[in-house]
Image 1 (spheres, helix red, strand yellow):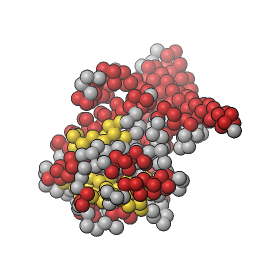
Image 2: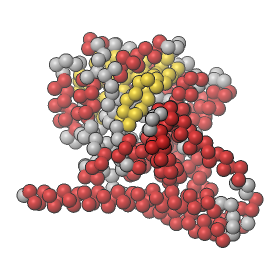
Image 3: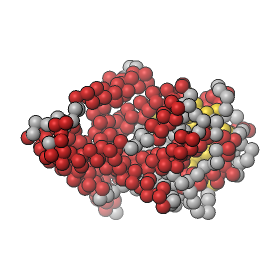
Image 4: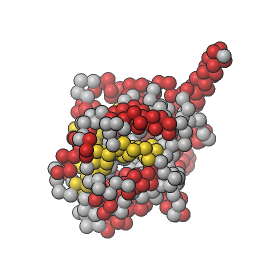
Length: 445
């Protein structure tokens, strides 16, 4: 018996597409139940009700509405699971993903590939990869993560993460690990670590590919990255000691700690930037030996290149052209993700839950600027532009001193400035799109 959970909140543009794809799944109908865990507060509720009624004749599908949105996504998953005590496996799909008909049939056999498999994670693909430079860069990052990191972690049997969608859990593993918990913003990472600390194993299934929507707006991408970074840091604070005290081997512990620390470089990068002018004025920069560090510059492009050759052997050269944008986003997110680190520490210190801010989805990525969920620019954009100016001044100082950090500081300035200006450009697109819509409405009247 498989329970398929579809947690969603205000997804009116993409939910019909998801439900139509779920209705086309070829899993035996007498062993499949579908829960649409709908916490929406807009007209998504009616879209879901209509679609559920359309497909109810041939599918055991239920529209589940909670009294209140307690615990956000983790709370919704736990609420739905409690209503289906006889389910052996539970698969999860976010609203913007579109499963292939054999999605469930391909996942289930992986649970019998090794002892105590607690969850199986499929690979993400991308519905809107080609829409813009932003979506192309995101696709490169996610492809590298799945084609190299997830596959390697699964192959060597070290701790890996469930990624929240496009995968399946053994229900007994969820219960033994303590169930879904909402004290972090990455409930998927949290549960997968707790399950593996209990002796369960995660498996990566590269043959199960489910495409989803990449955020087409830079502000939406920032929201997504900030939530992921905050949640990852929260899990680090929550589970660091349990990992260190566990009976895992020392190499496995080291890999787990590095994995949970993946967003910590951003605060370090910000500190390096802020200290740069002082180091330059004091002459301390003369003691820096940066040349050997350039060897590390080949690591990231090599990972992306290998991933694209593996996943897209015929078009890899065209895909890899977006790599400079990957670099811009990687550095340009340093303020965004440093804020996330501060938020994680503050929530852990005060023992309070943070709000789960969903990433808006638009279905038609090219026209996102005219859609209801588009996000306005916030004050943090001006901080990014101020840091870009700060990096520019530091770069000028380094240039005048003929110092080694000149190129490094210039890269920081360009990346931060690009991300900040990108947000302002997107805001202009939103205003332009809405003014055009207003003019058309006036003409039709």
